[in-house]
Length: 299
Image (tube, rainbow, N blue to C red; front, side, top):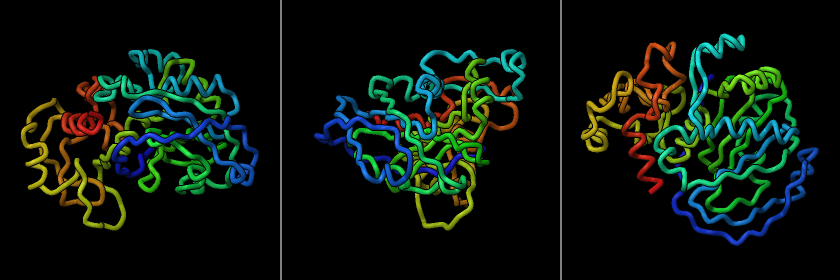
């Protein structure tokens, strides 16, 4: 699986005065179009709002959300995977087991909404911006997270983050049987997708080369060597192995820009077998600079 490109964080947390309108299960796009949903205010910096799409079983969905957040230490072990008959060479951790989210958990609340039925004909349709987000009135401090069962449609994307409207989409591309088996075995879903995509939300980009048009963009973790020396020069040498901070060539759509680590969670999936890189098994898989950057945004 690959992760989609990043999006810029929202600036400020102004509060709105929306009143609650209880969402109902929608049966078609037209039904969704007819109603705009609003939700009550929360006294928190960031409210993670999980919206299931094509997932009728609320208990099942709550288990999926728990896995994405994973507030306890993960129980995933290679032995567990073998016992469950799962071909899986990566250990995974939820959002609140990873820095800087782990140390700033009090800044977040979590809200789970009822299911929305919204069946499309192709995986590409799910990737389009604005197909659901415009039907809701979210608060300034909401981070909408659509978790979408693609109904068996093939797709190679674990998640993406919209730069246009600031929301996250996570895709369940496995069969329900496979997802259930992983949940029962304590196996995390989607390769750290929520942590990766939420970090896009706060402004980081992908630390791998992407195809696409160059637009002279500069990102915190993908920039010129001169700017990089100013941004993370005082961290060079920190970290171990693939997480050691330095100046590594190529990121986003810019082969001449540099990124702060050889590999971090803002790169592609874990490099090779995770057991070859024990330094990424801890709680600082985003890398020292990225952790410091997001922590600055949070605080």
